[in-house]
Image (cartoon, rainbow, N blue to C red):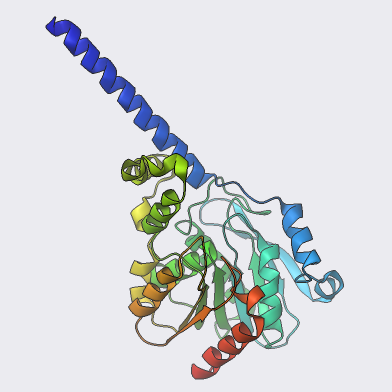
Length: 308
């Protein structure tokens, strides 16, 4: 009888273990291999919305280059240089997007006299890389792009970095945990902490809600095992404490994907020069599109306040 009980208990434990492993594998897959938008759809969307005007973009002086990532793949990068100055902005796009999505921000800064650098994050667009890490490895790729720009222009470059969503988190992680090399940063709709963001996403997902207590821990274990980092290590709110250079924080009040309070908390944590713009209109990553005049004016004020 005792032997039978032990066999039953062992079978149940085995099934629970298998179920946990299956859930952890499923969640880590959804994080590491988040479905990307179709590249043609991104291109067509930007053209149809007149955020990419082909003849204007084609007429800009530019050079396409491959930047070597320290993570072992190539990063597709475009240097766009209509101005003779050494003022540059590097743009970091959001998850599931690609460098074409950065062009609307690029246009804003070209009009302000800056040159631009756009590039594809790992696993996005034309760049290499097998997984998305929401800033952990992307921050090192950003450093490689910064290094490539400095090599081209010299150390006296006036440099800003603009990031949207995951790109904003990447920007803050770069500045606060790799090097505070740029002269200023603009973080548009970043998450403040990846663990908190996953918890927020899970609460909106009926499929995962019932297992939400275990879900993040399981995902964390499998991501560490499969991709070499922990969810806890992707924390812009920890990184922002180390940033000295000015940061402009931007978010749409009604963002349904990353709540605006995450940016507000980052703003509160940042010491020194900073500015906050909470846009009245738009959902996630739509602050510029839905509030163009206010967005541009806020950027001008930020640059002026910081002597840039």
